[in-house]
Image 1: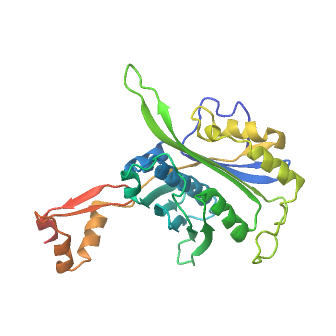
Image 2: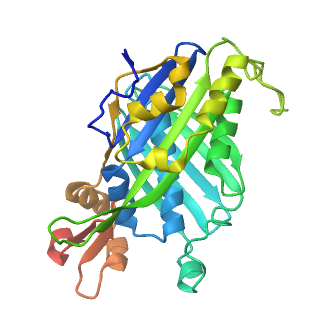
Image 3: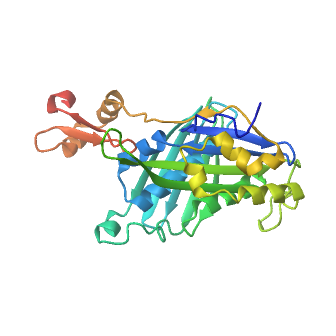
Length: 320
């Protein structure tokens, strides 16, 4: 176990990782996620309007935080379905640290000149579902909570409250970061994402589930938890995203008075399961009449992966 200090990884900021930690004084556990190339790859593939990309980025950061807490080599899925302009999104996590995401949104809203920087009303009201699949023929678990007000973090906190019965704090941040070019080359904008989750394990147990979740959970009135939560709330979005600020240094900045200790990092990478062979096998599962309906004017069939947006094109003779 490594104590987070100003000197820790001073020269290596560390992108595409989840860093678990705990505090000695208050007994709080937490995870910090920092995404650079991985989130830029996912969001750039979709090339959605900025507020849509920010929403998907928040979901990816949340999924990485949740997925890396699994104690087995399973899968975790975060999915929303709402009545807003972003009516559906899904992010998959596969242990130990692979993520992919897809978002569906009303393109007409932005084509009509609506403010592309406005996130209000994007998700509207609906549901957030978190599904855990342990694999090995074990039963899946799914928790479903209400999502409203375009606030994915608040919906996730409701999930923690109902499903885990743990006092929790969550902050998510997504933005584009400008990188200056070298030797006269033009600079570029890249997506970045970050998040901080802390939970109180200082007291074991919890209240029995009730229909009124406004009741205080066991541990929410701890002085140690209150103090640590206030410290966590001082984190700024730019600190979660800053590529020059190492995750360990940020933890020390926030929680050094609590005796914060960093645990081994988990690397995060963007991935996709699609391949030409898988797509071909999928198409061959259809009958001849159905394939005919899919063919283009020249007889070919094109299929685009919704996650990575890669298009696979099959000539007429390949699926004869």
